[in-house]
Image 1 (spheres, rainbow, N blue to C red):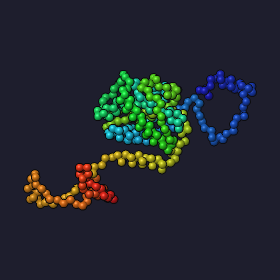
Image 2 (image 1 turned 180 degrees about the vertical axis):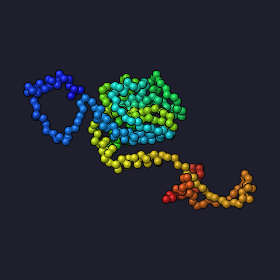
Image 3 (image 1 turned 90 degrees about the horizontal axis):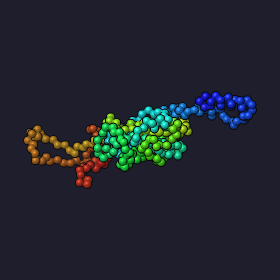
Image 4 (image 1 turned 60 degrees about the vertical axis):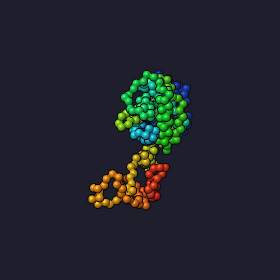
Length: 321
């Protein structure tokens, strides 16, 4: 109680109870099993209890987000989820440099706001790659984002919102609406300075070269109603969890490039004729009725050779089991 009431306030409360100025014993009946500990002086305990569950959601989001930005750039980018942390909003803003793309979204389903923070390195490197440039060394800007850079930030934000909603699906359905974008952290008023936030960091890399970071901020107060659902998702339904991981694995496997090859025909010649071959010689062959498409010498499909739109092509007729 010393963190909530001063000693004088405690003494005054006890005195009024003793004098009968405050009635006691007439409260609402409740079930003792419904009572749980709650720290009035801080919300950190709630956030800390929820962090292991949030970590799992973050891993799912990182894979979805990686898939999305790979499709946008057609490059092998990697997104890694770091360990989430608890931080007061005021302390978080102090550590941010200008410019930084701070995007506040409202989420009615959790009765709160979620902030997506894109650092300048991620935006600048993404712009370079998007327009065919190369990665550069980290740059400290002394200006606001250009219209092009702001447009790229909006595209990344849109993908992040879509992917985060998919990662939370099954726990709570989320719909994000961007209500504020600010490049100067000093002007951000999304939360109270004393609000405790769960800050989840995601590092974006390409061939082990860092591109930048995305951070997602969720108030701990928004996680309280989801606490049991998070625990059940993380501990209770292993079959559902395996299904979600299987869906992610399937998605990434489908994006893997596979080289297909086909042998149209073979021809036998003796060694004498082989050594006599010269440029311009013609070897008579007969195309078979069907050919096989294989990957790494493993037959996968059978089809017919022909042309399509002026290109040599194989019309697949059946799958080889």
